Image (tube, rainbow, N blue to C red):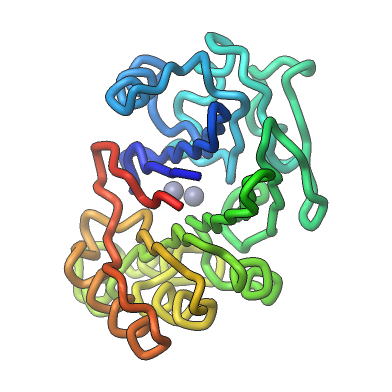
Length: 256
Ligand SMILES: [Zn+2]
Ligand SMILES: [Zn+2]
């Protein structure tokens, strides 16, 4: 299994996972033309995507979801709450999923974990390749780490985790006190330190890749996020590089 981020952060989020000839997209925070361009730079035809999984309906994750779905006829797997917030998707393409109930999609097995965030309802996912058993955990846009996430992410071969802000940059930065509170609150976003603690707690000898997602352009830098998480996972025995996903261009996150 391989995975790429197509862009990450408030300007748009999408992740593509590939296993053999099977491909799924997680979130579609770019318009149909932009998502097609980014996929094609990776040699992936948008028509070859089997399904769109949505974490939640916020614009930076769903901006192009309805239009791209219509164009490429992707079934959309998401919580009932997220699907309600995407009214332009026709009923026949809607695939409501629930936490803890595995779903098979074209060579992948998906499992959703509910995470706290200020959306209708928000999911993290584990995605397992049916053939090899390789498993990846994807979690962005969560204000706190629910207990179930630790168990689900403890057996992953690759992790894509939010490291949204440096707590000190957020505190001393330009955001109003109310906006700061929203970001750092339990239904906001994980700080570098929170992302680092999660990564360290689920590190195990079989873990092969960690990518950091959804860095704030205002309240974080790739260096701060990478340093915070690297320090924590080194202590837990993870020796490979930890890299922040670029904001605006596709990047390979892992190859298992
Ligand atoms: Zn977001
Ligand atoms: Zn969000």
